Image (cartoon, rainbow, N blue to C red; front, top):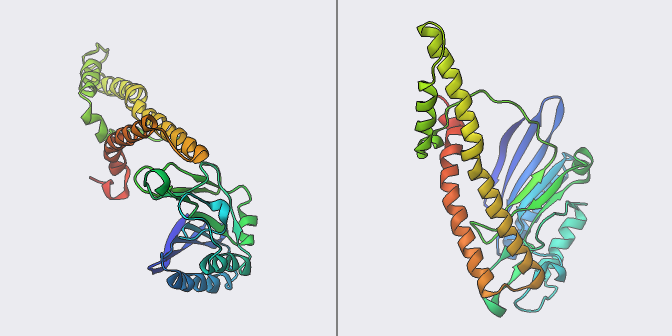
Length: 280
């Protein structure tokens, strides 16, 4: 699969997604303006794209809600002109809201008490031919962690697992135990001539590092998943009840701090995995 940026403007990035043996489709990353007059420009740009007849999906922050059920807290909902224009834009282009799993609201102003407001500002909209092409597509609202918005995860198909070759991970260097694993493996008696001993110790070291990585380092990834699950649970509780107790809010802040700390270790891991790190 290849992704090429076709058009970049203040409110959206239009990308062409190409796959072997299949016609290309359009992916729009949306970041709509808070000014409804500027959003009219975005609605027109997307309308122009839709007339090209290419399957397309738009994902991101549309900075507008459609109805009362997409808002909680703050001033009472009013069916303003910009909200009617948003609904008309969706209807006029025959766009399909792909729905979601997870918490209902994607944005929170992070204020306290009666000033706290939640809205569903983020969504995925697709043309009918895109939906027909990806009938099992799904959208998930991830927890709000580093932003006042929920990240959106759009999945079009199931991921395929594969076995990767052994590679030394830089993140291991942040664990003093990794040196013990290498030292103990290298000291293990093996048979054979000098070259055979080196080869067998390297293989033994590789196996032990993999096992240690799965048990110890892999625990970081499991901890992140656990912390994120706890964050999701608290945000879901807030989503349902509309308010969290002081203890729950304190717990949520602590979980967010822990998550940030764990991500620092992840950063080392993923930096090595990035294309720019290849060949270093």
